[in-house]
Each structure stands twice: as C-alpha cells, then as structure tokens.
Amino acid sequence: MTEALHRREFLKLGGAALTAVAVAPLMGLADDPPAKKRTIHKAIMYGTLTYKGSVLDQFRAVKAAGFEGVEPMSHMNQDEVVKAFDDTGLKAASVCCNTHWGKPLSHPDPAVRAEGREGVEQALKDAKRYGASSILLVPGIVNKDATYDECFTRSVAEIKKVLPLAKELDVKLAIENVWNNFITKPEQALAFLDAIDSPQVGWHFDIGNVIRYGKPEEWVPKLGKRILKLHIKEYSNFKGFNVHFFEGDDNWPAIMKALDEIGYNGWGISEQPGDQSKDAAALKDLSERMDRVFAS
Image (tube, rainbow, N blue to C red):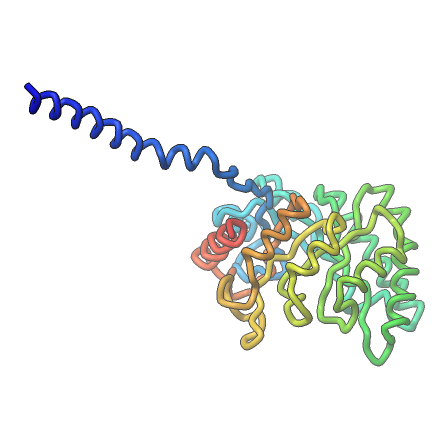
C-alpha cells in the first residue's frame, strides 16, 4: 500500500518536473525582446556591373539574383533604363551623377563648373524620370586646382544654384564621402551640409570609403537622419576594396547597430568591385552576402 502510494507520487512529481523543463525555455523566449526588423532594401550600383548584355539583360540578372533595385548612372538612355525597370519590377534606388569627377563643381574655371552643374541638373532629371528620390553627388575635389577651402566654397555655391530645380522635381542631392581629399571627418560633413542649409540636401554614406579615415559606426550617429542612402562596401586595410563582404575590416554588427539606433530605413546599395557581378553565380553570391550584412 505504502509502496504503491510512493510510486504514484513519484510519477506525479516526475510529470510536473518534465512539464517545467519543457515550459521554461518558452517562458524565457517570451521575456526576450523581439528581433530587430530592418527595412534596408538591397540594390546595386549600375556602374559596378560587369555582367555582359544589354541594360535589360543586366537588370534581369540583377533581379534573378535577388536584388530589389539599381542605382543607374546619369546620362544613360532614359527610355532604355525605364524599359528595364518596367520589365523587371526593379526600383531606382538612386542615380549617380556621371560628370562629377570630370567636371567637378570645385574647378577654378567657371565654364567647367557650369558644365558640372549642368551634369547635376541632368542627374536630377534622370532621377525624376526613374522615380528615384535622390542623386549621388561628389561635391568637388581637393587637388592642385583647389584647396580644401576653395573646394568647400565653390561647391557650396554651385549646389545652391541647382536647389530650385531639385525642389521643383522633388529630388534630393545626397553628398557622398569619397577619396577626393575632401571631408574625411563627420564634423566636416555636417559643416558642409550646414553651409548649404537646405532640406533638399543630405548625405549618401559610403561605408567602405570611411574605413580609411575612421570607423563607420562612429560616423552614423553624427550624421543621423541626414543619411539619405547607403553604399554598402567592404574594405580591407591590407587588400583595399578588392575583397568580398566579411573578408575586410567592416565591423558589420556595429555598423548595423548604429543604423538601427538612428532608425535608418531605405536603400543599401552595393558598390563592390566588378568581378563580383560578372555572371549569374557572382551576382547571387553578392546578393546573399548582402543579406548576411543586413542581418548582422
């Protein structure tokens, strides 16, 4: 009698213990904060594509690889680009001004600056036609033709001249940090934007370009909501840009955390070297690596 009672009590306790063990992990999960849901849309810069074929062939390959958008260059055949967008369902992530290196807004010759300004205006018109909300603009170059202060003054003045058109078209100018010996600190970027003083102008933050000068995750909170678009790019202090994602010095978890903290939502545009987009397999690998970047 007593032995049977002990057996029944043991079984009751055993069942309760098993139930507790099974439920405990679920209780822990319920207490954990929800996973961060990022809305960064994956695109590729057209100027980096080395996939062979027409614009439509290239867009189809980009779509098949899992991208959502493309950043065309300015001064392309508008009808051809529009047809490729319509056929594939891809979106225009941005438009990259195709004249800012050859005809910089910082040039000492007013005629060259005027040509550069016309190039920016064409980029704005292209963006409007494609449905892009901003253009990528390198504002100037510090070299034998322009000191830092001259580059700053001239490019600010030229950008202000295109603001009426930008406002009319409802397209913003996004200034990119590049290796032009100009703006190597976030404080300089803020000073440049403050000098222009327009809601039509923000920042096109190139993550890979910054590593030469500092940590991207330290730029992000300072630029904050002024970041309009992202160039997603890997960089190695030993091998340069000729590396794949996760083979360089980008601290992607820290960068993504910083972007989360400013509430960035928008386009993340690959600007990886051309050999990473030479065929369908390369594009697929690039696309999947970007997914890993965004999930970091």
